[in-house]
Amino acid sequence: MNEQNFNNIGQNLSNNLNEQPTSPNPEALGQAQVVNEPQVNTVSPEVTNVTQTVNTPETVAPASSVSNNATNTPVATPIPGTENNNMPNNMGSSIGQDPGGISLGSINNNGFVEPTKVEDIGAVPPKQEKPKRPMNKVLFTIIIVLLIGAVAFGVYYYLNLGSSKVSVTVKDVTLGLGETLSDDINDYATITGGGAATCKKDINNINTNALGDYNFTITCGEDVYSGTVHIVDKTAPTAQLKTVYKVLNTDTIAVDDFVTSCTDPSNCAYSFTNEETVKGYLQTAGGPYNIGITLTDDESNSKEVNAILYVSPVEITAISSCTSLDSEIEGFSGSMTTTDNLVLGLTDNGLGYLGISQRIYTYKFSNNEDYLKVVNDKSETITFNNISGLAQYDDETNTLKIATDLSSTTLDTESGGTFDRTYSALKDYYNQKNYTCVNIVN
Image 1: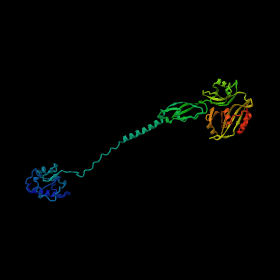
Image 2 (image 1 turned 135 degrees about the vertical axis):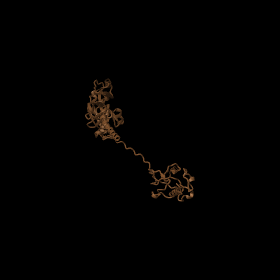
Image 3 (image 1 turned 180 degrees about the vertical axis):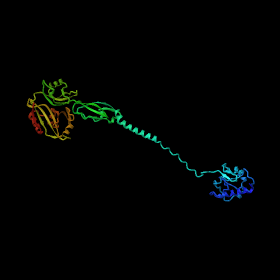
């Protein structure tokens, strides 16, 4: 290659650097472009020989030979179609590498740079996340089947195994006559296990108002357990008592003289608590004497009550019973009366009061509800309306009677002095009080 040809090559390189990249032009196929060069100078005309240092600053053309339009370094791109152009072999090693060590291509036999083909130099696509691998369908199916199986087993256990494992220990139940029957299943059996809540009881045939043994059942699923409720008498008898009047030194006295009636579901028996004490009272005139009586039933329930005994110094001729007018019962619906029973006999002044008397308060209620509130369990003695004494009950007429002692001192006080014991004076006194008197012959 001669000097003129080399200069033509440098001029062509200078012209190409000043042009904008365009589409491949067949006329430019013989021209070469330098890729990724920060700055390119034309080859000086003074260079006569091409050496390996062609890319060094000493071998480039003066600044005057560079176009004024190349102030900014253009981006070199590969020129399509120049892959087969030839440049002198002695330029391949110097032009094929940029100062940064990046290979730009090789110079072929015709003196053109054969650039390295760069493909797909566009924008780098954003990094895409690796798609999640979907759950294996077989594993998902297995999990669903296991869940369904667990639920099915739970239901089966609750309905079958749970109830079959229930433990029931039936109790032997004893209730008193007239007591309220419990509705709590735990009062009839001890129940444990998973199926305890499903157990039910049947106590429909039990009658607490009648003595006897009654069966009950507890059902847990298909299992049935039987038990017994014993209705027994747990309460001692109750009795209706009355006041007894006896004459001094009487030889005979019986417990039946004091007991009007005795009530108990399992029979009733009664006797003097201390018979010798009762006989001792007969040796002294006066009263009232408390006579102890023991009430007992077949279930060995017992209690002691007290009846009243008066001992007259002489034979009793009659009892004068004087009764007041009706008055209202405070706090209740009904009426009340007061009756004084005075023992009459022969005295030095004729028929008269013997100093033995009893006052009886009679309450007749208008309705059974008020009556039951007062009488409660119908004990032998009672306190009502600030009055305490021996009680008598009449359920048919809702009537309560309370007997108390009426001493001579009380009569003296109420009469305003000394109570006149003659029969005529006695009648006048009660007539003035608007009492009605009748004589009861002994």
